[in-house]
Length: 114
Image 1 (cartoon, rainbow, N blue to C red):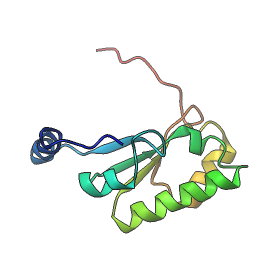
Image 2: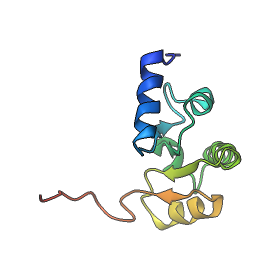
Image 3: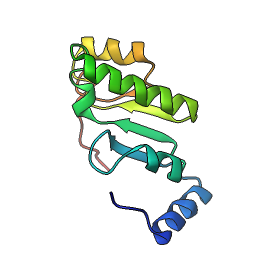
């Protein structure tokens, strides 16, 4: 596991000081873990799409998502479910109490015209 160094932690503190919110992306895979959540004092956890995409039919995915949501709620962290691609997944995410959702079911990504 990669540990955060003092420079990275200072950067996060500096960003918070100017009003930025901190999110952990792809939570549940790779280097993202519960220890990071405790050390970083994050505002959002984006639950990885590999957990969310089959949540309507895979009991293991449901259990993992429930644990993440329960942990996040206890620390007052908002959750985001990635890869919400159909109505069944959307309803399951809502039932689990995931704060926000993103995915093709809600809308496809669009180009920003500046």
